[in-house]
Image (cartoon, rainbow, N blue to C red):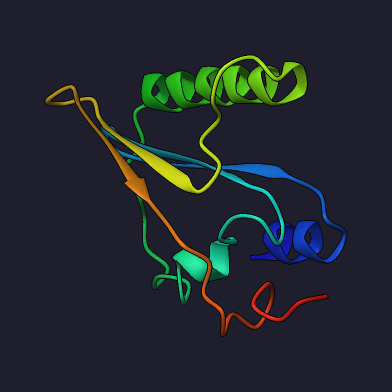
Length: 111
């Protein structure tokens, strides 16, 4: 949560991507406009070894680059307020809508 907390405090938008095996998640966080990571993930998961297929991480990295370009140029819709979940085993893609937690310790109170 270090990057999240810093970005929210300083009002810096950032991308969040996570990879596990053949699954990837991507979301775009805009402080005080979209949910922050503490709104989405209430607590850190227990530490464990996580299998990662390098190609999956590469695909998510490319998608992050596309999101940044879209944000900076204003072309297309970004994932603000949404999370894309990619299952590369089945090629399923889900987009989930997320809301800010009004009681979030980091972004819930107006600043």
